[in-house]
Image (tube, rainbow, N blue to C red; front, side, top):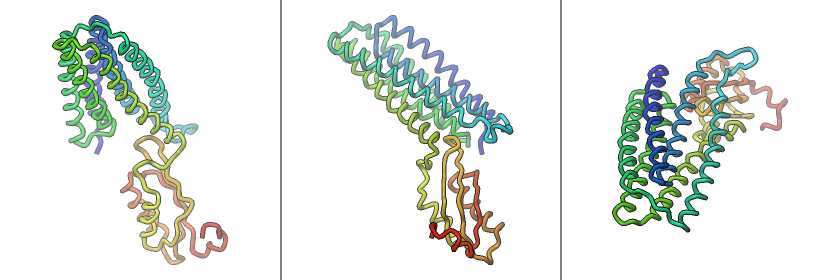
Length: 292
């Protein structure tokens, strides 16, 4: 069971904490001349965008459908996610370019404040991870679970910056700064690639990644009275809502309402809540020979 109001409160707190640390890290990056801190700040910016998107999704998904938009505004989150991911690629390109420049011409970085800011980041991100993980343990929605995954990667980024700061401060190895920047850029690229790929798949109405169409067809054929399933299509309305349409050929004696009820139970196990099933009697085989 999901708790939208509690999800909004939990995400709002994490957003406030993350945004405050983002500003701290950005100011620290400018004052210490640390590209690693700058990279990690933009890594946090990806999380801020993800949290805002999740909050927007929770808000807009509650808006009622209208005559012109029978599914409401569910896919607004998908368009936002794709645009957000493409913007992140621009940032990644800048970070990698700057890091490569610094590998050729190492720049002096003040390691001690970098360590202090990164250590604070580990604490801040650990709090956010704990807070969102608590939500996942108490039946909260997928928006909270998605942010938990983002925050875990933030911890890895902060630890990387902390290590870079320590290497610079204790060994004066300034190449650690651009190397960690490249590591964080790869983290951003990995996260944004998944975001864009998922968004494009949804817009192209691809089969959800966690659904095996052949397995699903087999489960539907196990419904008593079902002899054939064809024109089977499964697609995403959003990242969390799936739809299905199919033709089900059933025996002439079977009760259509019972068949639909049994099929609905099967689909619920795959988190498919929107279904359109056309029931066809066995006697119709001769009219649709291409399916047999």
